[in-house]
Length: 231
Image (cartoon, rainbow, N blue to C red; front, side, top):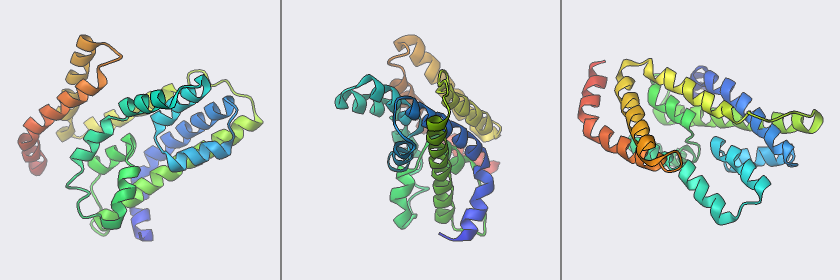
């Protein structure tokens, strides 16, 4: 990966940097609050790198949850990434040696950037995707280390900090729907989520909502592609 790719990707990742540094600090503080050092916060962010999953893991660790329970809850929480991957099959087809890391580093925010950002003409697309993904993870790791170190030095109340992830999702949604061609998928997603929530309740709505969203988007794919080509 060239420096040109990093320079081209950096301006697009600045909003994620602002969010990930803050969220990473929050995660590091939560880890410190249950007695784990900044080293563990940084290591988890390097090897696992699953923002909402890591925040969930703090609660599971502090509660002494069983491995099977942890695995099941993590699977449900991150099941949406299965659908992310399906939508990126063609985009990642020719990424070569970068593909394993692109799959590993596919967070909600990185997905939003990869699907909404036009690749600069002077940079090969695989290098640009790799640079965006790498920079985003670096921001998260840096925030985790800072939060872990701060928590070890200064006492903090971590009550409510997990809402920061929800706030970032809202910001990303707003950025997505600013593009006219993204408004229909956003509307379909909202309808599927609300319908599943009303029918199944808060504990069971996520996976059915994602399945419904995928079915609708596959049916609407020709229309969406025509709109994108005309834009």
